[in-house]
Length: 116
Image 1 (cartoon, one colour):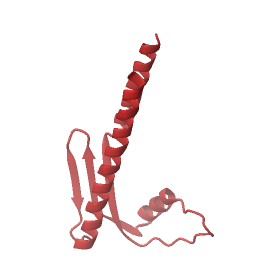
Image 2 (spheres, helix red, strand yellow):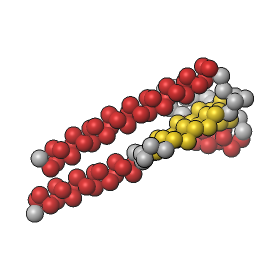
Image 3 (cartoon, one colour):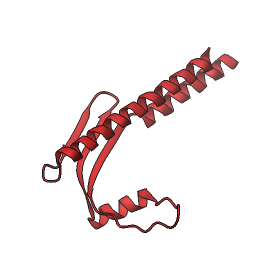
Image 4 (tube, helix red, strand yellow):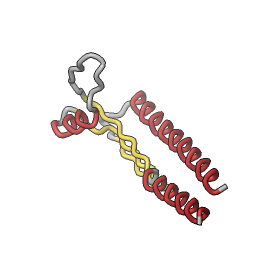
């Protein structure tokens, strides 16, 4: 019975990982966000981005979506993209891929320990 529970836990872990890692989205924006920060307080980036996008203070310059099945969607606004911004976007995509690989490796390691 304990083996069935361990196997079920391992399957749940895999399912959760696949849902979270089914796609990687990297968006590069250009524009200005003005915010006053109090002391060491971190700004609420999600709220700031939503507000800036809605108000038109920032614009999407590039977007990359990598799906688990290998499909890739790439958008680049030629009017807003330059070589430095493109390099920053490509570096962010690479960092996202490396981060996901490390996390998936950790999950695989944990699963191996659960079913061993």
